[in-house]
Length: 112
Length: 109
Image (tube, rainbow over all chains, first blue to last red; front, top):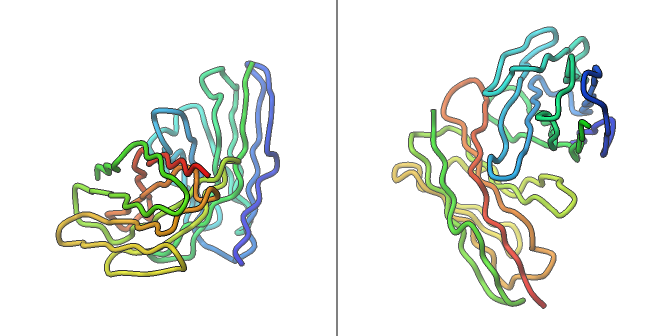
């Protein structure tokens, strides 16, 4: 079974803090993705990566950056957290080509 | 970009009933997935179905790509089927999935 894990289920941070969300997959997938989910807005893509050190912006990249130094790990970074970044963050991975995306359990981030 | 519309937005059933969820999309797609989001927020893959019909137990799905819609059938529903069902599509080569707003299903005992 594909396993995608995220570093925290719940996280509380203060405005202005630097926040790291970690995602690890164990299936040697080339592609990894970060989404956020908000009531009424659904799931929106923040960034994705199709290879180590490669990244592309999604629909809502502002205020976020990413890092992919190893194939299995994809990090989402909030350089200076703000209250409007309070959300559920979901990581996903997929093999190369048009295949199924598998999701992690999500991190519910609250920025106070 | 591709627009994805799901209907109905909400559905309430009694245990044992059948249901059909619909997903319409605005352009041709090369990837379509159905997910179930459980109460804890986990998105669980149900089907990868850019075209054709698939079945998995009480669930089945059909995608008619030429008419730009997909249907998810749930038969003999159970309370554990409750949650939000999402349809997501990809129309290009960059693997980016566009999600619908989901259907909130409540199955009462």
